[in-house]
Length: 307
Image 1: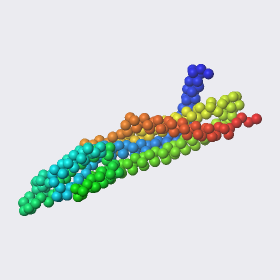
Image 2 (image 1 turned 90 degrees about the vertical axis):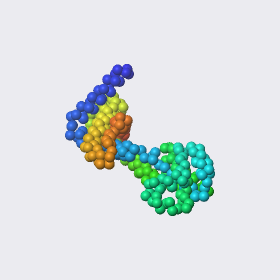
Image 3 (image 1 turned 135 degrees about the horizontal axis):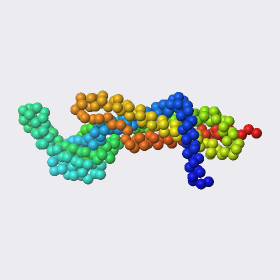
Image 4 (image 1 turned 90 degrees about the horizontal axis):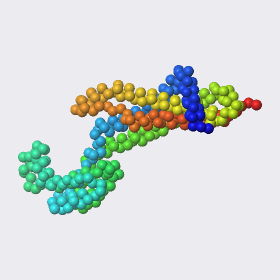
């Protein structure tokens, strides 16, 4: 069979499927709405995670660690420890704050300057201000780094200065897992909706299918228009889901901008990226095709010409 004939048959099946959907607009629209809602939910959650990361300025780089040395540790030893810490692959920068500098800053900003002059000795220790590399800001990596510094005999206390950042990143990581779970469950829901719709259409066209098989039509030939119907359902649902998310962005854009201005920010709510839209449309087409193929493969075998 030539390529031109094959292309013509595919085009005929596509146009036929499109025509059948157009001839029953009410049922088509209701099915598309159900598919669109199922696809819009994980897309909206994805947009929420992206906006949460953007609005907070990617807090991962704000994770710091303060290593307080014992008060009897000499400055020269503190400098050696700072150099040793800087050699680690998971450490971006190490800043040594000598005890004298720490006391000066405390006297300047605490408001207790006069009271501190009565002290005979500096009670503050040397402090190493450590900033991990961005790739090592997970909870496990920071805990490993904290244990490393705590094992030094010169160290009195190790404090993670941005534990709230770790909690926030943990929440975002949880949302990503929820996103994957929601996408999987709702994807199964889309398969079920399209599969059931195709099953009903197959049952409604049973006589036509029997005649087609009687004159020599193969299962692949009979299945083709149903596959295109499923793909059209998936694509139409994905486009409608994109529209729902876009409308939500427009509706929420001004309230979010107003809230941001109250906090001194000019943040603007972001919509789905080009990649997100491509993934959404591709997922709709694939789910539509797969749902239609499963339904057609299962039910067409049971339809044979009557003797």
